[in-house]
Length: 357
Ligand code: SIN
Image (cartoon, rainbow, N blue to C red; front, side):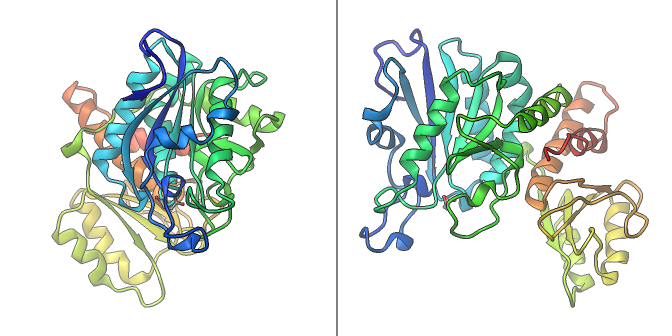
């Protein structure tokens, strides 16, 4: 751990966890900002660049959890991040947490942290803020420094009555981390596209109402899987010309779950009907989502669902995949304790979380 404090375990501070991403990226020269490599600069160095703007009296401690391009995010790293966040939330000297992260898979990390640490952060009244950048750290107009500063302020300042929880801040706006979804390749606000959010520092009352509704509904965190407990779940996208062999292939290598990114309201190609029925009969967990990018997927629409199959509600395919992995693991852990709960019981709790409008 790198720190600017003599006794970090005693002095109240904001913990900055580095995961890598473009915010920690370096371009070969400032004129070629798109030819950068993500995850090159240490989180301590990112903080040192904004040191003069950090509010007086605010102490920061940094820890490098990883330094990767987030397209390479792994189950193991999610577990490590989740355990680090949980342990840090329970540390009385940590008043808030900022995570610098690549934006490509920040959507997955957002829902993972909400489902595994959301209740704990709310109960303890501490904010965990994900942030990132779309331009590398040495680009002339790098957006990382202002995003990091905004995130630190969000993590540290009493903002109206904004409760503890898992949030994201970028491009001067904030949202719940569960609402993150990168829907643009280059726009500075790309990961916040899907969410009606709030300007950093200026809370929109209807957004805050929605945040509180989500937090009231999320009353129990799910267990964090250890490395080999993560179930293998794949996303299959239905498309023109889809073939039955695609589903059959995944059955041969025994995936535990399939998330279907269906067309329209979550339908899939007729050629998948028979192999999917076989997969479900074999005990593979099946969740239907839509590839459209917005709106909800409902049960038994457009056709009657296979028995045991669930619809994803407003969850996108990447979010539904993490939710299904955590639900399958929660079922396994519940069984060990003699509780007759299924992955559907856990997944259903996630799907009904209120959508912030
Ligand atoms: C990454 O996700 O690590 C690279 C892209 C980004 O951070 O915007």
